[in-house]
Image 1 (cartoon, rainbow, N blue to C red):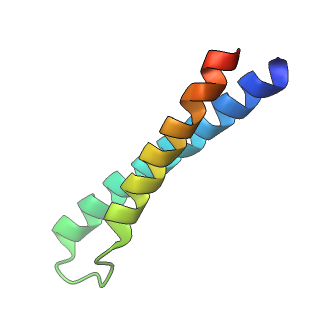
Image 2 (cartoon, rainbow, N blue to C red):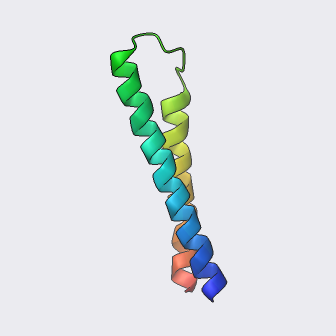
Amino acid sequence: MPGVIGLAIVMDVIALAFLWGFSAVLRRRRTVPSAGDSGQPAGLALMAVGLTLLSIPLWCLA
């Protein structure tokens, strides 16, 4: 099952990238009052959580 483990690792890395983007957007929002990206932080956080939840069954298969 090395393919399943690789897929789970890739999904977790992408989730970390989304969380990093989420924190970058929040930091930018603090410095720039009206960035015009009202739903972007929530969307990034939801994608990161979704990818992490989807990778859990893959880790269980390995």
